[in-house]
Image 1 (cartoon, helix red, strand yellow):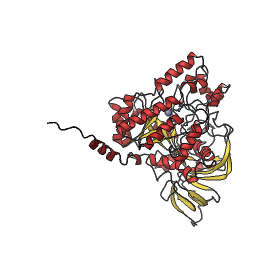
Image 2 (cartoon, protein in one colour):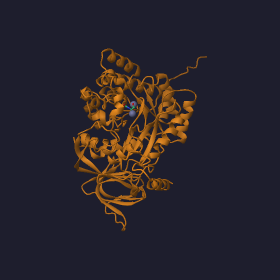
Image 3 (tube, protein in one colour):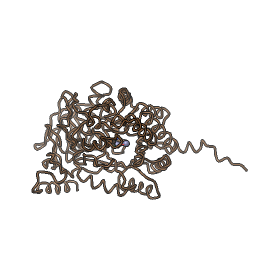
Image 4 (cartoon, protein in one colour):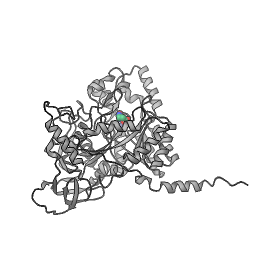
Length: 521
Ligand code: URP
Ligand code: ZN
Ligand code: ZN
């Protein structure tokens, strides 16, 4: 079915007559390539195969998009493409749990769509991502349909989370449909963005209860939106209208407060909670405290929060400063280091990007008022390199931990392991060959995003994704992308992940502990 669809799209691309531009990505990016559409047999020889729990020297044999065997000295017939991986790591392709492709937000739309964003991801060793569907006027089904359209451009596998932006009699019914029929197993609640995406505590409580009944994972954007609104007013009154006002208007205490509040409400409902883009030690410490008390709370740092600091927002050049505007904001030096430590000890579990890219023209919407700068930074292409360089090269985590935080934990949380997140016989052939002795360089001149800026401009470091295999096709090799719009598959994600184990027993224990109602005659 998928191959047939690829073939049809491939034909359409080939026959597209009069333009140098691809009709799907409309960009002239130049990496639509049909050769990779054919199913292939690949043998990866002699590399160190790294999974989240184990590493060993072995060959990996792939046929028709699936890993068929993982063991030393695999012999194959002629006609199999052999890739030499001696001295290199063979790891599961990255899975980014947090992206916004073609998202309409703050009066504009993110510059990377499902083609350019995914092409960039593949060039950086990420082979799957989970994007946030935004409802249309609160309607989940309309939002889902819109994202089905947007994602027709996909050149790699992807799944969906869904945001909940209002509550009425229809929304909980639509949540049921999303979980039971559409393959969505997580819902995001925004406690910030007053006047657009923000919801009340009352709605959050309803949402948490509904998530629990469906076995879906509740996710929160944790900032106190009312206080942010007040903070923004204060900055404007002080005459601070530039990008630094963004950081000053929403300090870490507002992230800590909202994180604590969401955690306590999830505890009250006794349902698991996933805190997205943890940017401050204030929020991280709330998560650590809850975990210590036994609560099931997952914290997701993003690359920008781990490695950047807020000094960039004070840059005298507006375009340079504005490209770093995201929410919660990039924090003062020290927060990132604390988040890295929390990732290394397991308090924070998996790394996302929150890839939500706007070019410098779009960022200039807020030239006179930081409140109008579209919020978001890039990271899809850079995540795998930067996490390796920052966390593994510095000795903070091992190669197996690296696989866990960039791929396996995401697959487990969203219930698609071991199809994804593992180099095992039977898993999807989403694989990277990573050379730890090579180096990477980042620049907007060479990246594959459609943006004209990159928040990691000029960075370099150790380790390089030399080959990316997605769905059994070699899509990145010799610094060249070969991707086909429409070849990516939607990955359905079932409910009741491992965090739900034991929830019923805990509820039963709670009920017996009440010793109520008291039987009074
Ligand atoms: O600044 C950000 N994070 N933009 C994307 C929307 C969100 O809050 O995740
Ligand atoms: Zn958010
Ligand atoms: Zn986001």
